[in-house]
Length: 112
Length: 115
Image (cartoon, rainbow over all chains, first blue to last red; front, top):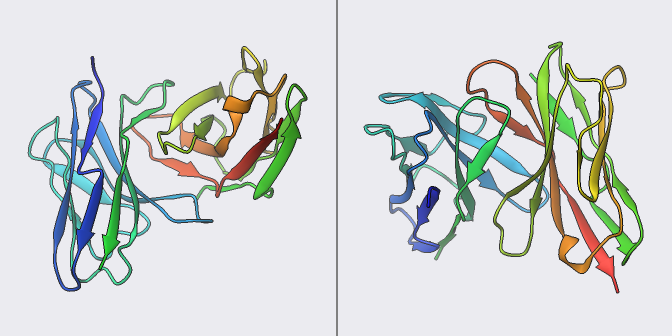
């Protein structure tokens, strides 16, 4: 079955460490997105990519980095420069048509 | 920039009753897409219903329907015959018409179903 797989489901990071969240899709979607979800703030866009080897900053890109070397994969690195990384992270992909996005099941990142 | 506003952080409804969740948005575009997503406790985002702005007819999916008022930039979600499984966070979202435009979300409404 086609879908989006995010891993790990839970991730713990020590202060000063970089961590990478994985997002893989087998839907043959061109576009992929990373959102951050905090209580009371909805979903905020971190980065998005509309094609391989190209990506754009979203509304809250500071402290994050991404790559898009393959159509299927869009990993997100949370760097030590991100001051408040504890949050729920959602990856999504889309075709550009009315069917909207397909979301992964999310990664809960906690700084310890 | 487009913005989406959900003014009701929490709502509750008796089981089997009807509830309406509000959403307003701001855009300078004439054509776009609007969505309602549901996020149950599992946190999986589920598409509930979608509306193309160039269609005047309001979208309907079983017990879910929308009231789309383009001039007022309003996009409310009506849930009829509420069920316990409808309990979730509901997010309104906006997307431009062309290409793989990003989704802009509101802050969400937490819906509680009272047995």
